[in-house]
Image 1 (spheres, helix red, strand yellow):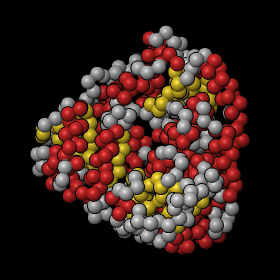
Image 2 (cartoon, rainbow, N blue to C red):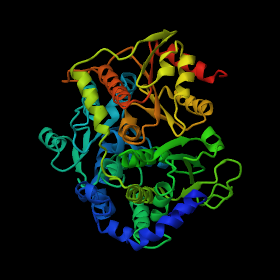
Image 3 (cartoon, rainbow, N blue to C red):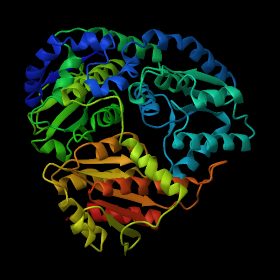
Length: 549
């Protein structure tokens, strides 16, 4: 596969023509490689000075490989055939893409849904190694998952410490705790690399390498691309892509991502977190919208939408970077990018740094992620009654909060969805947030294109709580033009969290309620559909959305 390819049309090309010459004159690329922390303005300098390790990590990352290979061989000799990764956001998304692209099995545990977690721990626990991946170790989801999996190992007669591998920052509470406990292995990553830029550090490499992915080749491809992207030259594709997504005027802030024949499985979800969490702040930012070929966002030419197609640059069927767009995309404002996975990781990291500079924001912090966490912690400590009057329709309880006058008057699922679509501002979007099982209840994703067709506006879909570490930042920190549909339930069987004063059901309920509270406090419309009967309620929503409006 070609290492890196890019083509740009319409507003994307215009942005490149307008912005890249200044970036070249500013020596942005070479200054980035030199870790110049002044590139994003004075307000960002302190944070940027601590978060630029990702631009020069290849020697340190390669140093991990011999130890990683030895550990994988040892585990194989012990009959370990399954890798379970407990991690959130940047700690889980890159390994998921790496392993899916290579066709090797990795079980990603990034949910607090009791049904989901119970299913993971019920499968082949005797042959499982648990990778606990967290920069600090204080992430409540990851800590809870670790406790639950280790308890299951103990119950199965497996030594949980011998089957636990930790990836964390040097000197973190998790590193200290793991060393004291004597877990099987601790891999320390570069503390100067933020989570969403950590794909090529121990956070991306350790779980992927243990699962059998060729991480050495991944690093080779990435380093080759990094060399090309370091040049202060108008052909630098990192500068071009950054200008294309962050430099359109007026800003096309809905970035519609579609896989158009790429062999890179799930890359869009990784890009989604990188762009949304890095740029969605101070009332601006970029909202990735993941769609499939033929879905409504591609059939419209909206003023605030830029289409990004991820393609196979070596394809001969029209899906290559320079191939004809055909009838699949109505918008003339299109970016096409393709290449190896390692190259794409580096390309998008550079482009996000460029886009942050053009948007005038700090692309290395995530101030609004903490607001939902704080609200969830508060509800765990002191549970409060749910806000808003509840209306029951069949197996669904409806609650409305925030500025949603139309939706608040509705008494049925059909009526509240119709009203919620009507609440979307002219330049707005609808976000569907499902606090359910993303492995067994994937049918719910079918409502996204249906709602997009009805709304005539971009619609995103996120599984809770993982989207809180991704688009959740944009929801609160970006332009307040979102409307929100939250889907929750109560598990038939709850899961206790060992040595913690809450269960998974209590945790996921607090996460959903906390996020809804913060969104409503910002004045944005929030509708919660709570499934009082999980299976029946889910089917009811699907039937309503699929029925003619």
